[in-house]
Length: 202
Image (tube, rainbow, N blue to C red; front, side):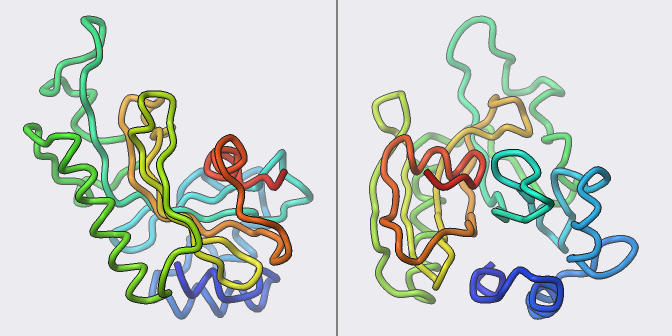
């Protein structure tokens, strides 16, 4: 992800950055050519042990990629009587996840989900140094964590939030690389959330 953040996203630069990650090329050839066919590009690409989600921001925007993100932890807690129980098939795997990717601890707590985010935060901090901003967000007592680093004209955002691939059934912890002007202030609140869900600058 840091390789993607530090490269250009034109065809040649993006292909070279993808090669440096060690992830396999998508079916049919280099990543840039694959993504240029927006109509046929899936919401997530299998990259080794990971699913890399690609966003084009507000609409297709001429096929210009606005964000890559990788989910590294999921959390589920039934909120009311209508929510499925933890042992139902619906909770076995998100539809997009390779079967070997996820291992669920059904006794996990929200505190352990926070620890998963903290472990990610320490790993990225060791590579990029102190985050520009660290905070909490969310509608339910601000119970999601986030941290933001600048890498040139990109933001790296490590955040907890909704998992849209499971129709928000799970919370997820994920690392995002967002195309973002180097001269703009790092967004907060709703502006940060807009970046997380669509890669759109205010």
